[in-house]
Length: 334
Image (cartoon, rainbow, N blue to C red; front, side, top):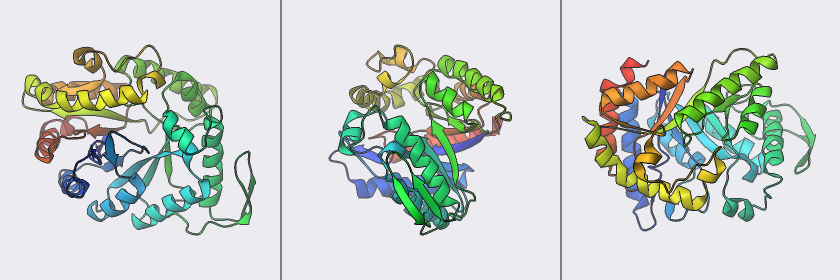
């Protein structure tokens, strides 16, 4: 298993927080993660992120790349909200800056505020997502492109900057529901497992994903990435006591944003912490965290983006968890 240091909760801060200092903390933690052997860093994306301030990932990763020294850089991009030409050139630019180390987590999004602000209807979001990806892939390949879709038209154009990776940067596609998992599998794409669904849901969906891929003649899965809320401390009690207030605050915001309604089943992020955490968060002692991650390895997960901190979590707290995980958890799973 390869391990990513998720920066998503660290590139966010409270509405009145010092984002200059917060970003300095992120750079320090990236250096720590690199020295401890993490394989990649990950940054998520939202717009209009109240009650948090949130740095945009592609721009932030351009600066962060100066600290990574060959680590991969995974960025969520809310594909339906993008102009596909600008997105293709922005991603290609970052791929050049990192010498071919970019991975895109192509996400549909779920927040009405974002769709409205970008003029995207709920009905068109899936069509926009896959059309934007088709055009971006054609542009990344570097030849002359003529393309006429429902939402974008270009005639006889070439991308302004080609990515290092050819024919295009690596793309993982996020999905919550079974329908999107099936679509990704039919197309032979790489599915990025939802970070918020409980283990049992994901284990069932992994079997669905593998079966549909096989039905459509695609090779066995060789890359199966996931993201997970993670915290490790010397004892389970310490880990829960430390992480709980920050995780509760984050998931209260997710509930307000409607993230739970985007998941399959009857998920409710306003549930008590113990109920919310069960099967969803990887929080505990090194042995607890190792066992939980091993369950994902057993169903075929190959890449794990681990989020050790959330808005408001002090840098030293995050760093302590990262160091303990690197010393006592990750070696058992590599």
